[in-house]
Length: 212
Image (tube, rainbow, N blue to C red; front, top):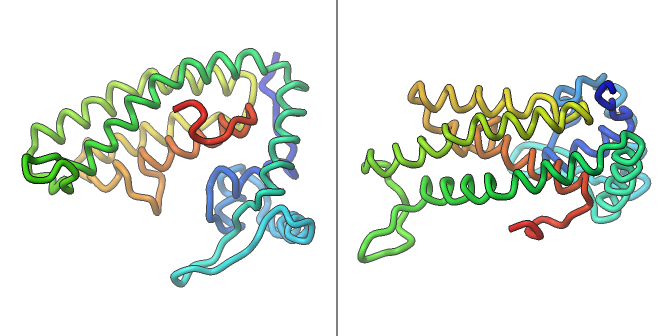
C-alpha cells in the first residue's frame, strides 16, 4: 500500500502546530506547498480562530490556537483511520518513548554540568569527556530514530524527512559545529526531534507530557 499523502489544507493547519512560531514560507517549504496557497489558507484559518499571526523580536509568524489544535487533531484522526495506520503509528510511538527519554537526558547533560557547589551549573563545555559522552548518545540514537521514522513514513508520507534532517544536523555536530546540537533557530538535532515528537503526539491526539 502506498504511503498516505496528507491534504494540503490539513498540512497548512498542521504546520504551525509542528513548527511552532513559523512564517508562511517556512510552512510551505517544510511540506512542499505553494506559498500563495499557504498564505490564503492561513488567513482563512485565522478568521476561524484556528491560528494567529504575531510579531516578536523583529520577526513574525503563525502559531496555532487551542481551537486550532482541536481541529488539527480531528483532521489527523480522520487521516490516520483513512490510511489504516493507527496500529502502526501507535506501535512506532511505543518504540519512540524510550528513545525520547535517552534523548531528553542527553540534551539536559549538554546544557547542564553539575558541580559540587551547584547541581544545576551551566555546561561551559570545557569538560570534553562529558560532552563526548553526550555526543555518543546522540550518535547512537541516529539509526534507531531512522527506523522509527521509516516505519511511519511507509504509512504517512508527512513523516518522511525527519531522519535525514536529524542525520544532517548530527553530521554538522561531528564536524565541530556544536550549535547544531540544540540551537532553536534552525534544524538542529533538538529542533528536529521536538518537531517529530509533536507530530507524533498530534497524530495520536495525545497531550505533550503524557508519554514522559
